Length: 215
Image 1 (cartoon, rainbow, N blue to C red):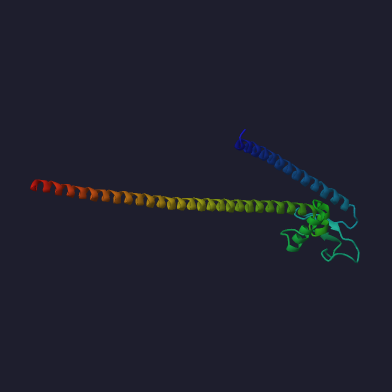
Image 2 (cartoon, rainbow, N blue to C red):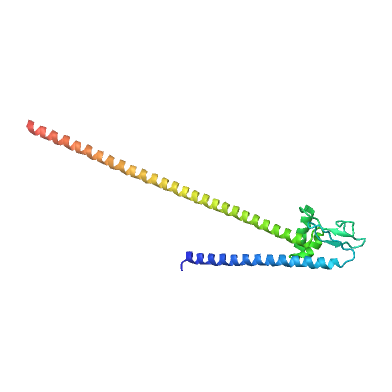
């Protein structure tokens, strides 16, 4: 097996492994989402047992939790008997808290949602998946741009190398041509000298013949 075939086989194995990993990750995310839903439902059932629990009958509302009657109540909570989770677009302060919570608690969505306070488990989980997806897309684009840049640099270097090679070839070609021209000139000079010598010889022979005739 030559190097090219070996690399092709290795690439095929890596791609196969990557596909299996992607499928497994998708399954885990779906299972995780189902578990989160179950946790939210169970916590809602537990909260229903609290005497000060109220739940909106509107289908668009989210679950509420009791607010502790303590003097150390956080300023982010509403001054009512229960806390209403925020809906709609995430504020910058909420996103900052979410990012800090992820660094502190990793994949523990329960702890993350408690830290964010203004969003429930499901909202936190959905936002994390969205941020992960956006980051992955950004990484793909950056890798694509980097690959293009590398290919561009390679192409540029190749062109520079070819240009240098061509110039060197032209240079040596000119040198060879000059040498050839010099050789031709030398031969021509030599031929001229020979012709002159021959001419002289002819002149001498003519003179000799002329003398003989006179005598």
